[in-house]
Length: 420
Image (cartoon, rainbow, N blue to C red):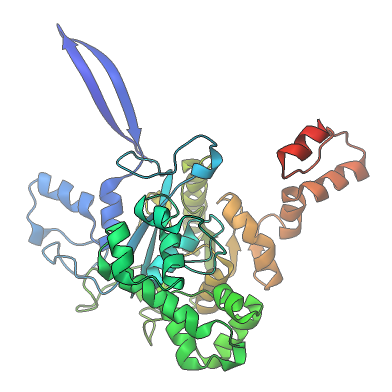
């Protein structure tokens, strides 16, 4: 990934002293291009070389010139990821200072859908806008002072029957967004307390269109998420594959830039082609995980392409090369969750999936996918689990007679002091 360097320098008699070098990995033009499906940097470069808009082919649509301005029939939502909980003395209050360490982008056909999807994409242990078991002691303070958790304070306020006007007064958030958030809570109330069998096709469809995962529906109905998934499929409630084609489907387009949504009836592309292999990306940047995993994912995709197979990339980080539209045969800008990966496998039926290049996020899915009958390429999921689990790995070392330092898994400072 190329970095953009901002330099502040002083010229003294043709001798330069650089006093600040700020490496930025945001790739701003790439972010805007991925949100709109319009390759801004490519087109801008062609214009700088003297081409006219009508002379430049839009590489995403492969059908129209750059004269066609982006026309969107979807919603793109970018959500920052904060790792503030890793620091004891840092302020969680948000302002003009840049505190996020990464971001995700979700695509769908409604704000409710993309909001819940994006929260799950962050991989911070949250299931969506609701169903997170969060509680705020001073709710009005959380609403009036923006922090990384304020969205969930809004959810609690709506659950406690705060009006949109009250929340708007405290947060100054535009009411349109608050009403959309209220739709999610209203949908939650329709489901909560009902047995799964009472959820008919209409309510199940409404929930999925509002971004509820099978796990969230399971929490609200006290049902295992696998049971919810099977029941949902029996009802015939399944997502469809849609293209980011820049043209809002007004003109034919040949794009491989895809997402799944429950707002639709037909798939936009031919599915279940032969010789396909999927690669799971690394998700958003975070402290301790950055560009290196994306490099591995792109290298895996390039190897698949050279082998003559068709590559499918699944990732949700708009800052990465792996989510560039021209890297793979099919790019699913989607959640790295068990439910969504299984949805894509139901549609595409690839030969297998590579989980070993994307870091911790795909590794956490390895055994779950294996248990669902998905073919994991490379290292056996059981061996991945043996290496991931400290207890299992420790037992293996004891069994084969390899010395290891004394260790113990602790969750409190008191327990850690006792061990030392």
